[in-house]
Length: 180
Image (tube, rainbow, N blue to C red; front, side, top):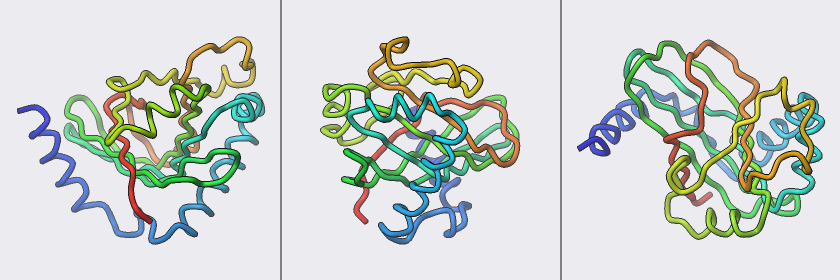
């Protein structure tokens, strides 16, 4: 019942999302991913060190989130292995509860070992908090992190928030492979 309700919320949200929020092509996603990575590396130099050690990097350069009591979010991105895009994904979620506003944010998810990366790649729809836990790193802390101090297999960063939205999290986000 809850999943059906979340689907209805998400379908309504998607109908309201402007077409410009969704990418048209691999080239557009790739370009946006590179811009987001450059910004990420500039804002969190320690994040770059972690990214260099990661087995894979999932980047969602523009995730639109909006809600007034009932909300949703959507974004498209790419999985990079060895610095090259190997697959394209979307992230989507629906929620109810205390929330108000709208924002566009960027997300970077680092898979720190091959086991976590392969589990993600072999899933038909991966849900944060269910199929894998993402350790969310805040940018103040990102200046002090290192690959030796963080042992989590999956590390996430949310940055570049434009707009205002209470409730920043990965939990409940469903990530699905898309064809581009």
